[in-house]
Length: 255
Image (cartoon, rainbow, N blue to C red):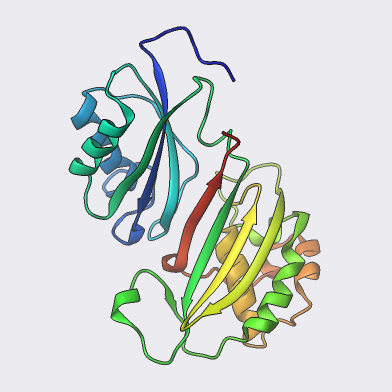
């Protein structure tokens, strides 16, 4: 990747984090407040330009991001550190800019991503916790993390994940993805389902988690995941876990 000789045009990689519980996902929608909407308003307030914004992903309503990346080309000369501070002064408390840096003009936040890591958080105790409302799934039954961690390893590898995808207009053609790692671990009352891969289909992680929860409940055999993958049918997998426990945890780039 080579920087352009056009000194006025800059491509910026902006990394943000947000609590998605009050938003209808990332992408702008009619009659619903989204993260993209509040971010674009903040950016316009700072530079008085409406640049084209490229996002690393699309998160659904209620889903959170600990690391979400945006690339955007601007001609404004504001230094990166000043832009970061200015954006944070305009953004709501639920959204924060973590980093701003210049990248080559042909860099794209989505297409240059090498992979992503998602974490799904489950509050695993009898009583709910008001501080986790909207931020973790409350699951009152005992979770056998050793069983689920072992079962989750069947997801690792390159597979056709049709069984773990909600089919709609955004999913067409290739359903093959590579999962590099999947783990289930307990940290106190929180059980984290962590999955890393080169890409993810619509609702893929939430269906994976829902399937593992069905295994925990004895509704699906612990060794059935490979069979479910091979079925290439959404009906073969478990339910879609609710959105509030899902976090986009990290986006990987070669920069």
